[in-house]
Amino acid sequence: MNTFYFGCWNQPGHYFHAPGGHSSRAGDRLQYYGDHIHLDGTLAPRILRGVISWQGKDATKELRTRFGYDSEECPQGQYLVHHLTNGYTAVQWWDRNQGDKRGACNSTILLEGEHSAEAVLAAGREHFPHVFENLDRAGVKLVDVTLAKPEASS
Image (cartoon, rainbow, N blue to C red):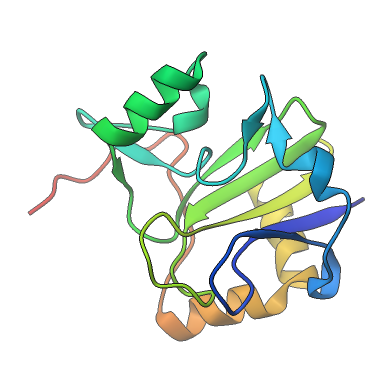
């Protein structure tokens, strides 16, 4: 099964990577899903009016843009799992530990076929260990919030 990583690779800029960190031409077709929606941050969890959701769920570009302005990023490491129309399962989270500390930084692991989050993350750890080592060093734990309710902010 093919496994890919989309995100920062020890420096600013989100790119598509094959195992070992090599650039991949597969990114040309896999970094988009649905109605030509780009992966970059559209699958990571956001909170709007106390509900966890994601930007890529909205039907139009205008609605996705509005959702992005009106909602807030969930904490780093909280992720959502998605079964995409391009034939891959994606796990995406906000992540400022891969070489870029700015907001909107995110990481995505994609695994060909329909899988559980655990299977996707296991493939990610196998093929992109440094991504997970960076998270571990920063003390960021990956937590599935697919069915969770957000915690009240203090």
